[in-house]
Length: 305
Image (cartoon, rainbow, N blue to C red; front, top):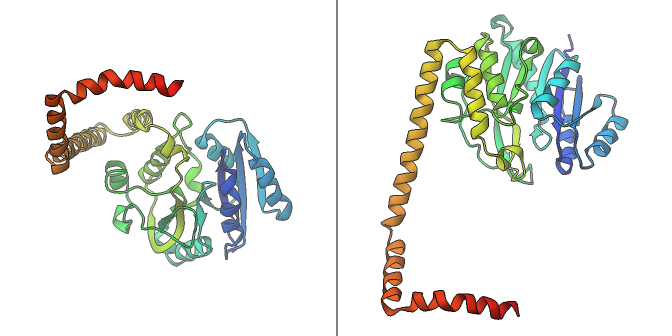
């Protein structure tokens, strides 16, 4: 049986990367796929680029919607997807050409234990997919369970959504939370594993994650979405699960605060900092600092003339 794979590509204002992402789809060694490109109201030339791919290959499908965020874009594609399996791909990321084939092969190999998710390894890149950097965490099979994903996400690891390869049935009752602009994938990972789905780790680098300074995670504060994630978990976890989750989260923030204090103390005790203080005291004693304060406005006036 030739399974159909639905590849979901949400796009917002990342047209400069879209060709490269879609080329990685076209290059897949497994060819029975559909690629749903969702233009989330992009103000750039995303539509022009996407429609070019649709004209050249009927497996590419273009959808436009008014801007509502990455979650709403993915959810729209999930509603339209016809595949037996789902592969997500953000428009600035990249799939290695064997991603679909090797994932399906592993599912067939472990058919007797009903594996519904394959998670592959990944590396990071900036502009050149042939020059990759070490990933920010070490994935392994022991992490692919409900407890690890709930309690240790963003503590010791997180999983880029395009590392996953999912049986489509998992999304019959699960969607991305549309009130969040970050951590929405965390909610989905936890929800899927809470449902009892089994996963297998594929120790091959099959996904590349772009370090993009203009990406939504880099350009937005994550605190508001962290609070929204906590609100979601409070509604969907048992009292015991949420208590443990809360204690670990509080402990993590206290540890982060202590780390910052230690770094500040180390800076204050450093030779360069102490030398700076000494110079400042000497200049103050000599009256140089006070003179500088008086001269500075005068110098600014001269420069403006």
